[in-house]
Structure formats: structure tokens, C-alpha cells
Length: 547
Figure 1 (tube, rainbow, N blue to C red):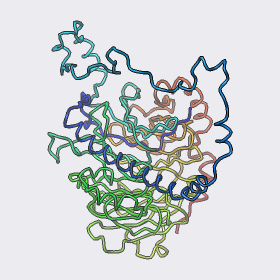
Figure 2 (cartoon, one colour):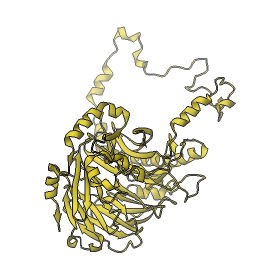
Figure 3 (cartoon, rainbow, N blue to C red):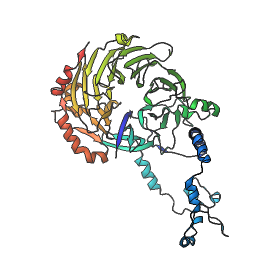
């Protein structure tokens, strides 16, 4: 069984509903889904018609030749006589339909029109065993999410089946489990949590919500309600698949166009970024080389930007200047653009290879980080960026890994605390000071190639790091239990983690996965951990350049 987690994102405490509701399939919901599904059905029919026309054009000439020349095989077949011994079985009429008898035909579902439907089982006179209230209460308690719980969203592919797993992390109990999951139409590439309700009936558009946006290999972006379980269809679709009211003629003209446009993406969505100050704005980056700004109130594209020359794979909003967006691309540049001025050329910085990720420094808004395919982390001063990417130099560069830095994160609570993950299967923690970065610890968690490393967003769990990768498992590490971390960030480590260095290592995973791999992880962790006095520091320290 092959599985892989491509992306993870935390949900801060207090946003999830204490008791998630179960999906209600009513007439209004049926009509909404039918309209959206009709678009996909029409597209499929159009594809079939075009394929048949293409096949007819190609086979027209060959069919004429076949008609002009009678087949010898047909002549021979007509002369074959059926053997006398087989005549009694009447094989000539074996495939013919049976003649209708005198009785009434039986339909598959009988007379379905006479069936009565009751909204509650208590109203149905034929149901004598009523629902047990105690069972319902137990189910409700099983779904309960406490105010001290964190949600962790993981985009997962398992045996070619794509879905989003919603984990609940109970820090006090060292417990991590799957609360529910959401089926996805294609392999997910990025997820972004939203704190605003999108297309939710009966809820004010500026209310506090708990939603998620998912980008996949498909050009559409799906938005789901995390407080509703067993959903059949997303609350909204950003893109051409969500234009249920679009005129059919207009749709047919646009459908086959794979050229980038100002209304929707036409290729895979590689990155998403929600604006925390202008909560109705969501930015998306795509393999179609464009960045798009979506208005979640209308679920329409508000603006499209085309200032990159290759696939755009990373996005990050500035935490102070809320209209400034940082983007990274395979064109080996990172761009700083003001979304209010789509006509202006953005400021850019250049790097040595394809960009993997970008991040603003959460504790110094003038600086930002760029990770690359060659395993290098660049630290730039935004004030030195220019419209010529070749003229901008990094404050420092760090050869963090020997392979691609597939993910990295900056701790939002603890200044100078950075985590990097790589396809070399290691996770490294760094202490960033005025002199530059220094390695704190390196570890192999046994998750395979690391695709996601993310710190918890809340102060109470600031030292928790979620790690996931190509083996389809996710682990949460309490980094404050590591001696190297306590030494580097001692003044910021919780009191309970202070001591003589004999604090027990805390690594939490899902029980099913933990039982089969916990022993291996402990052995790998002990063998692979390298603190700031070890060989890993000398190796990476020598590769750090200051320009």
C-alpha cells in the first residue's frame, strides 16, 4: 500500500466547533450539487462527442474501402451449417430476449413511487426499535473537540485515492487521531486554513468560520467546511468548475482553451495563501504561471497577475503590509508585489535554482526567506530588492541540506527558531541570530522524504512541530524535550522542560502507525540526532556564506 502526505496546516485553538454537525442532504443541497455536477457531465459529453467525431474522420476512408470489397470470411461464414447435434439447443437464438409471459414484470426496485419517507425514524410506524438516545450521545461525545485541542489538516494520497485527513491533537494526553476525512477529486498539492465562512447558508459572510481551501492537480480550488462531517460536495469551487450559472454557449467556447486567463486557473494549483487582515481574500499560485486573487464573498477571481515566466509554486502575505504578497517561481526568482497595483512591475530577487518555498520573517517584517531546489536557504532584506533580480544579494545563504529543501517554517512565537525538511529524509532545527544561522539538531523521523514541516500556531504549544512525508504518516514532535533546543532557546522553553537534560523525548503519532514504527523511530532518532557540537554543524556551518 503506497501513501503520501503532500502538505499539512494547523488550525489554531478555539476555531473548531465543539460538536461538528453531520451533513444534511436536503432539496436545496441536491439542487446545488446537481447544477455543479451538470457542468462536469456536459464537459464529459462534449469530450465524448469530439472524440467520436475525430474517430469518424480518421476511419471514414477505411470504412469505404471495406464496403467496396466484400469479405471472404463473411462468405465462408454464411456457408457453415449448424451441426445436427447442436440444433436441439437452439444456440442461434441464445442471446434473444425472452418473451413476456402473462404475469406482471418485476422492476428492480418495485413500485418506488408508493414509498413513504419520514424525516425522523420516530415518525415511521413500521420502525418499532427506536434510536437509542445513549448511542447518539456517545457518538456526539466521540466527535467533540475541546477548546484545548488543535486540528491538523493533512493532504494525503493513499493507493491513488486522494483525501484530506482532519487530525485532532490533544497535547496534554499525547494523543493524535483522525477525526474525519474529506474525499478529494485529484492529488492534493496544497492546503490553507480559512477563518471565514464561504457559501454557508444562514451565516453572515464576515462571521468567524472554520474552513479549508485545497489546491490539487486540477485547476479548480475546493473549499470545505471543517465543522461539517460526511460532506458530499464542497461548499464552493473557485474556478471554472464553480460557474454553475455560466451560459452554456459561453462555456463551450472557453472549455477547450488551456491558455491562461483572468478568470480562473487552467493548470494545477501549487500554492494558496489566505490574507489574515482582509479575510475575504485568498491568493493562489498555479503551474499556468499566474497568481490569482479570489474574493471569497463572491467566489470569483478579483484580479490576475502574470509577472512570473514559469510555474509559480509559493506564496506568503506580508504580516504588516497586508496588501503585499511574496511569491516564488520556477523561473528562479521571488517577487514582492502590491496587489493594489496590478499594472506595476514587482520587486524581485534572484536565486541559483528553482524556488521551493518562501516565508516572511514573522519577527522582522523587513526580511524574508527563500528555499531552493539545491538545498539552500536565502535570507533577503526586502528594502534591497529591485526590479532587476540579478542585482539583489542575500544577507546570508545557508546550505541547509544536500537535497531540495521541500519545506521549512519559522516559529511564530519563538524568534530565530527555524525548521527545515528535505527530500534527504531529515528534519533540521536552526537557531538564527544576528551572526547568522547555526544548527541545533538534525533528525530522521522515519516519515520518508519530508514534504511538510510546520510549527503549531498557539503559544501553549509553540514548540510542537508537525512532520509528514512520502510514507503517508504524520508525527508531532515536542522540540522542547530535546537537549540541543533547550540549550539554544533555554530562556524561552517552558518550565516543565527545564532540567538536567534527562527530559523524555515526546514524539506523538497516530496509534495505528505508532505501534509498527515507534521502535524504529526511536532508534533512528537516537542515531540521527546531531546537536550543535556534532559533525552536522561543521558541515553546514562551512557552507554558510555571508555576502
